[in-house]
Amino acid sequence: MLRQLALVVMFASACLTGGAAAQTFVYCSEGNPEAINPQLAITGTAMDASRPMFNNLVEFAPGTTDLRPALAESWTVSEDGKTYTFHLRPNVSFHSNESFVPTRPMNADDVVFSLTRQWKDDHPYHNVSNARFDYFKDSGFGELLASVDALDERTVRIVLTRPEAPFLASLAMPFNAILSAEYADRMMQAGTPERLDTHPIGTGPFELADFRKDIMVRYRAFPDYWRGRQKIETLVFSITPTASARVTKLKAGECHVSAFPGAEDIAAIKADDGLRLYQLPGFNIGYLGINTTRPPFDDVRVRRAINLAIDRQAIIDAVFPGTGTLASNPIPPTSWAFDQSAEPVAHDPAAARALLAEAGHADGITTDLWYMPVSRPYNPNGRRIAEMIADDLEELGIRLELKTAEWNDYRITMQDGGVTLALYGWTGDNGDPDNFLGTLLGCTAARIGGNNIARWCNHEFDDLIREAREVSDRERRRELYDQAQAIFRREVPWVPIAHSIFTVAARKSVKGFVIDPLGYHNFEGVSLSDD
Image 1 (cartoon, rainbow, N blue to C red):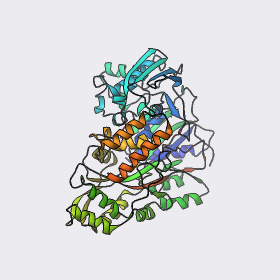
Image 2: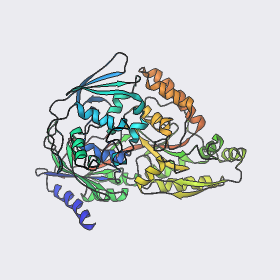
Image 3: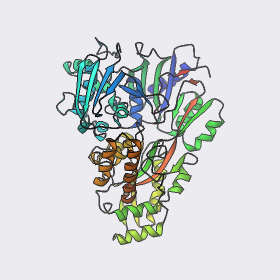
Image 4: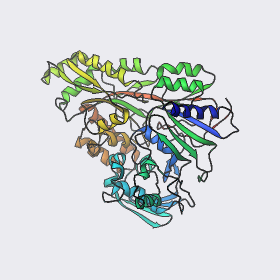
């Protein structure tokens, strides 16, 4: 273990010798990725870890949610909005590793493989690695796709079952990255198909060198990258779960960029001449999910009582000082679909107590409350928030047993319905409101394994968001989303808590880094100068 830790420090120290030598860049990541193949990723941690290795057909321009061509250099859409024809970029190379050397550039077969693996139950790779494809399923792709065909080596046609306004933005999300079909075939023939997921091959700016759980993920520059070789020769994700430890390592030069600095460290970072702070209004939501399938929380009166009892402003003041705003909706104010008419629920313990009595629970309730073990932009201190909620609810006679688990186990427990009350959150993936309302609250996502941890399926709400997906006119979509948010506020499957400011800390030697409005950490095009 000590030797492995020393490796990370050695990499960091090497790059501080100057910008002229081969550059090693260290990013202090907040946790272990649950996967390094983006098809299997469900957390931002894993998506960050997979992004250096992969490209998509389309992508977001750095620092924006504006789409631009990537592996597809152009595309056309039919008049009925259901047929997309993509023309692929020529001569794009795949990585190689000790088990595989590609014999051809990226082509249409790779696109077909990457989508159908997740889509078709009878695909030979569908069940490899016990894959669940949670993002693919929660995004509704299983029912959205009608066909995916290679028309020739550089042309792919995707036909949808209905028009889908967020479709192109969804194609830019990590789960739709393009994998190598040739690599998959070779690994299946060798009897090691799981290497597709554990030793992934992509077309991105960096190729995988090493992954050591709890320690680091290490990448090396891909010399044949289609946009050109990176100035960073070695990229290291140093896994550092504690926010204070990340900042300490940043100040010491042991990493160059730090994920999610704590609010208590912001002033010191700003005052340090060797550091730089990047901030954007967060496209995120932190919330308390209420499992609406478990009595007595299937009673809306109980859920409303919980909403009224929690002093959310006190949480903002204590845990998000200067870095968060009070939430009233399930989507952030930075979204064009945010319902401006909404007001945060007032803190009213007396009204909460009356509702609980009306629901037949004047003697109180005993249940569990789960909190995240790692800091996230939408929840920098899960334990502290859980304790504050427990204190507020105890006044109503609601007694909470606080629970947590290692981050990957925590996420699985949430998705598999093993909780009653749970702190969770979300950072938008593609700039579209459906990525919040559909992915987190739609009936499709209420399945076991889905991201709707409240297990809330309201068909009136679901019909509205489904209709909004098929409408291209933004004003009509806004009207539908306003109605959906009103239903959410009436039925309260969550306690919305906070929208945070997305913050990244970096050394001033870092050049070319652009903060991502979707909360990712992207190191393509980044380099180092002398400190």
